[in-house]
Image 1 (cartoon, rainbow, N blue to C red):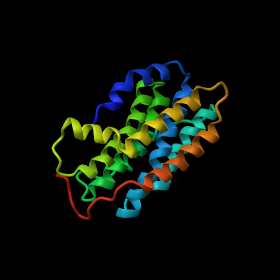
Image 2: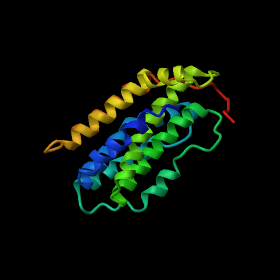
Image 3: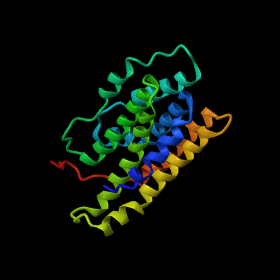
Image 4: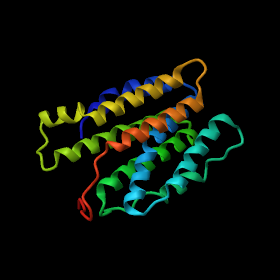
Length: 206
């Protein structure tokens, strides 16, 4: 794994810390929208999971941003119920789904705990899943500085960083358009997911 995200984490936390709760959570929810199509991939490949249930949980986060009567306290457990099993034989797709569900979990927690760090963790899922996808093209390679540079400059990681920056900039403006933010993140996430590699069938990484 590259340490590129860690190099920018402090700046991301600083910028998120300047925002109010709704803007931080909207950023986190946009990150979750970007990863939701990868959970759809997991479900389509394995027949497991429930992408519509996960989408409904993300929608509850958006509702909390725009309304004052939405209770999210019971939802972290619902997200955990949608996580793939450990040591799943389709470990690549399961890895994508793990990041997708974790991102929703942290989006929820960023609201429940009014936490800057949880918003950072949500963004971290976007970066980590991109790094994981790039690693699939390095199978069997010894980790070296050259490999780290290839991962950092991969199209997956470059797009992850771009998406995080776009979503953050969108919530920093004076009058954010939540619908546009949500729809753009979901649309770009769908396009991004199409490029992600499939894993080998019935192979475990254990």
